[in-house]
Length: 174
Image: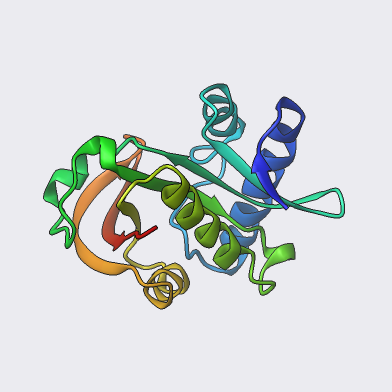
């Protein structure tokens, strides 16, 4: 089940961030995120406070999370978007996280499909997102789900982590 997060979910979401980033420290990174820098429990708390945090829960276990809102980072001005839209017409996917213990179960796909459903319900014609250029699994997932590459930019993620981001967008119909 995918649902809006509750206050009680925040430590569990933070634990999924920690699990992923600890694993990536030992096995190489796909996310380019940094343990204790981004994402953190504060990331989850801030998103929760604004009703942007969603969790995928199975049998009482948080198996993944995503932040959905309409806030486009400044670097999106460099995007070569396929679908023109005003900020009010765009849903943005941020910080989609599936911990390694839950990988390979289709949870990433389910969270992206949920975002598509949210955009449809809100009558938002475009979804945008970004990922680190080295995150091949995420880029493949997004493209397999109908997202198109839309340029990129060299950024400081959260003002702290240098990375080359690639952007994706997708038109939504309802």
